[in-house]
Length: 247
Image (cartoon, rainbow, N blue to C red):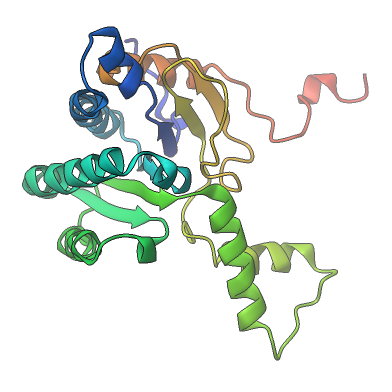
């Protein structure tokens, strides 16, 4: 990949890691094998993000809707998540990766919650890359719980509803991603063209990159291809190019 001006690289990359099941089915393997193979793609993507200087990488590991899957698959996914976190934590910590998790933790088993909290504490001082894992997460849930927090905080001190900037700031402080930059580049693998309830508020002005590559086959080359595409985009955030103004 040719060099890209660092100023044109995304600060925050979010990825919907889709295609594990189809990868396995095409090879007549159980879906769980596809999820296991997907770990390789996670490692490759983390390496690429660190190499390119991405500040924040958010991976959609388990959605709110995934609870509707067969119980045996949910159980297998949770075991895989625990196993991956336990095995990868040492290397992530040594490489300066800060781990964080977003999602509805109350729905998770206490063992999973404790493991996540321990990983967050251990890596809290790292600053090479923030790796954020969305587990039991849904964008609509995030928006609703932020609205609830806002209502609770201001039950006795109503906000000035005509001051939209202040209202937006107060609302965003209740999101699971409070204090983080918005999503710049939203990647979805596997050929589907939808957001699947992921970071709906945060991705308002994200560049959407859809690839047919199934997640187990996604590697550093594919990540670099997405960055190259992003760097060539003309991000206007709802405005028009100055050369087009008045035309």
